[in-house]
Image (cartoon, rainbow, N blue to C red):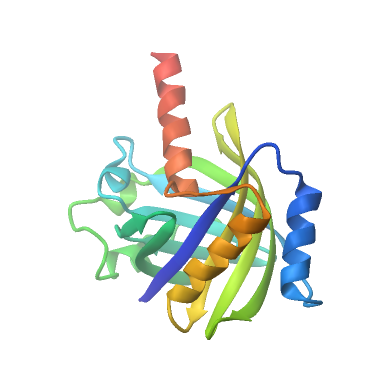
Amino acid sequence: MAIEIEMKLAVKDDVTGEAVESVLSDLLGGETWQETPLRNVYFDTSDLVLNKARIALRIRHKGGRYIQTLKTKGESINGLHRRGEWEWDVPSGALDRELLSSCDAWPDSVDVEALKPVFETNFVRLVSKLDWHQSEIELAYDVGKVVAGDMQVPIREIELELVSGPESGLLTLAQWLQEKLELKADDVSKAERGYRLFLKGIDKQS
């Protein structure tokens, strides 16, 4: 298990993509971006037991890899997220239910056979790493959409993930970025947005 510590900053609608990339390029000082399309399928039961327990389960398609990820309930304060995370490489986009059953964090009350896809978050990620005030931070700019059935909402956000060093590095870097761009600390994860969209679709059908 790893502890994921990250900061999410939503880009406001009136800020252009060119402005964001210009500021981030200046910040990186010549370091190159890695550009990666990411397709993420989230799974839950019909009655959304995982969501009610604040657990997220997804399979990410990244290049030629499929990565199954389980994230447990954590805490989120002013855009700073902290939670447990388990990752496994799997051979395809199908869930490996045996891995879940053998994971200490998996709730015994949830039947792994009842899991099914509920929504997707699909986006292009520009990512690089930098050293900032004694912290190593992974900097990502995500642009894409959350999709649930025939409904979708846009994704446009900056993620700062702590690789090593003090958490204060995330906070001071976020403050620096907010001085350069119109950004908002965001406590709502992509998964939470997906669930909200999924439930909205159910309401429309009823």
